[in-house]
Length: 95
Image 1 (cartoon, rainbow, N blue to C red):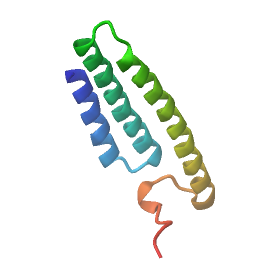
Image 2 (image 1 turned 90 degrees about the vertical axis):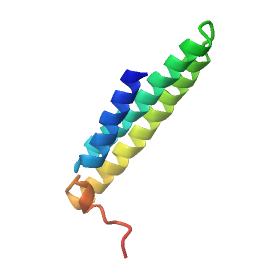
Image 3 (image 1 turned 45 degrees about the vertical axis):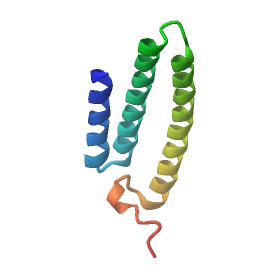
């Protein structure tokens, strides 16, 4: 539980302080992995013989992998148009 909390806090700090969008995506993935460790730990403590926590974790890893592929595709498309990957330069939705 302590490891999960530490990884989550490191990911949160990285997501809030990074300027590079790739670093922000990596920090968000670190927070997802902290949640996965938490799921497995709770499953081990509450139901030692069950595998529900591991199954949910595998599903979450699959969804996170698809999410990072879509995120990187969007970043690549924006980079081709704007020639930058800094978060403060992404003002595409402003009028």
